[in-house]
Image 1 (tube, rainbow, N blue to C red):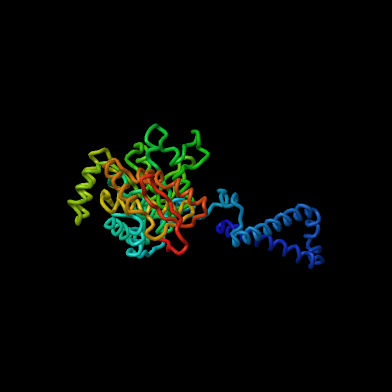
Image 2: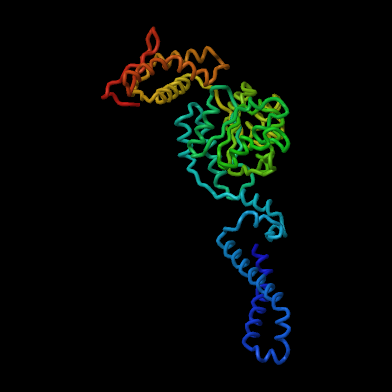
Length: 417
């Protein structure tokens, strides 16, 4: 736009010059009559007046456009027209330049120790992973130039070990929005990727953005959790390759590139559990050795090499055992009680209740998951909590008996947990 105004400036001065000539002509009309110019002006006066009026209108229009541009108030259709081409459109690929600018991020400095403490306070039995993850996040957020996501992390290991929960806690600890996708929903069919990345023009749904592309367009620094990534269709995996390697994903409906350079991707997988757990113990102090062994194990169960090559870090979760199961159960009970608008008194969970939950989880073996534990807790305490709430309780004590769990109303003097 600026270059266009600069090119038009000489014409403005021409219009001003002509207007000045006319003014002078009127002032020196006697002299001009003697040399015969007045007669010519009289014969062509209408034409000349029209030309001068047009030039004057153009001059005022250019002045107005210049003022609007300086105030950044130019209508969109003017800035997008080819006849008002920006110099960057003429001399380079402006879209590519804008994409690269969107990838430039500010350095963010995170206290790794404080972050690890927040993670370990809510994620039971995975202290080593919490420490390592916090250190990785600190290093990657501090990078100013980054053409890829902050991180692409794979959480592998048995069900119920806290993989999904750690992803949620990480988003909360960093103050980022969580975009959570169950990849089993994108496991089959030619259109498995459509709901994530949008549909091409001419296909059903092409008027709307995909769930993932829209999410990252609106919240570019989100934590993107892809639960059970191995269950996704191969076409879905292919679409993620550019997201993890090149720093953008393409929305199919309009072809726009959505930056992924500020996002954190957390993948979870239950594949090759036994082998990975053995490897994590064997290479407890050798991250490179663990990665080599984990990559081989995951390739053997069907992970594509190009997907594994784009994963920055593989964290192998240990199965929960012993008191760790009790800790998870206690935290889940506390959250459930809070969900009913109640608090639990300090020491208010009967040890027998936790012991029964531990025994039940052990009997289920490797098939047990955190969801199973949550369901068991809900079945055990929900009705009693509702009854206590109806009686006006604010704080409760859970007591295990032969008849089940009873939520006793805590006295006002009893401290809360």
